[in-house]
Length: 419
Ligand code: ASP
Ligand code: MG
Image (cartoon, rainbow, N blue to C red; front, side, top):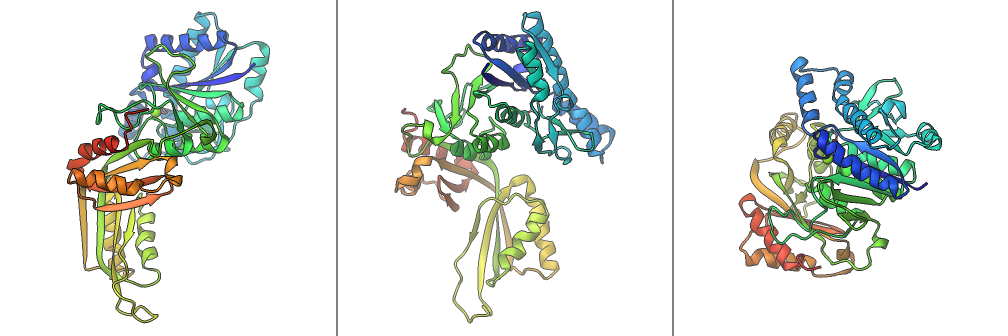
């Protein structure tokens, strides 16, 4: 029988009624003829509570025990979901990660998949079981310890199972009914997309459209797993939600598919640094060691071409990172200066910026997207502080107070409200 993966996030299994509601959706797919692998998150708020219990008990906790504790939320919902399905007459059983086994690396709280052997679950399907309910977010290390995949990891579990079992589709049930052209809380004109390409979703996911864990989209793209995002609170059918799929499945896309934003950005500029080979490495090496997620990078043009040794030449370097990493970034730069690795006259931090990006695979074959974007921002008198582009994305940093205005202006300029 064809296999379908259905993943239910925390709000979709938040209490017994919602678990029953999710089970109804599973039963419907079984009646349609699918063998179903259900991946469940912990009840919403549960993982946070467990993390808090660990941190309160042991501030410098043993990461293996952290995983043993926080993985337990999913065990509860997996068992309850199996029980509910049994009550509804559907043959189901639950699987914890170690029972499958979901083999992962030993990087506790950030483990990655090594293998998901099909044998045990396939044997149960062969016996006549129709549903395997698997605890998301967790796995088993080679040392025999429980691991977790990082917050939001159940999405990635779902995609990994869809890839391992050759599922027809991986349906991600959540509390929104799909992927929108922008955040509906910012623009009332935001429109739900029927389809979006993996690459576009990847840009949107990493830009803060928090619907899917970024890793899950990467994995889906690598294994060509068709992903569907849909609401567990609505009646749904084959056409509900948004399909995240390969470009070949998208007939004609607009040049720009969506406008994404990230509110908590900071901009750091090092003024008057030496312009010599190795200077970028001397700046970004220490930042990487400090674990700073550097995003945009702009180096000014060399002031002047001096001799081959670049004696006396200077330039400026600007980069962005999340606001909550600013203090660590500053310290990394001050330490690098103290150690004589770099020199700068001034270090200026602007924590009042936001990043706004337009994303679309159509950009590859269309000119003029940047011009149109800048024109729309200019018309609203929004000043652009940093610009960065990639093949399918143009991002700008602007003052955070203009975030809503800028998103709305761009959504209008690219007519994203129209299908
Ligand atoms: N329960 C885990 C978390 O809250 C994993 C997940 O739900 O995806 O991060
Ligand atoms: Mg999630």
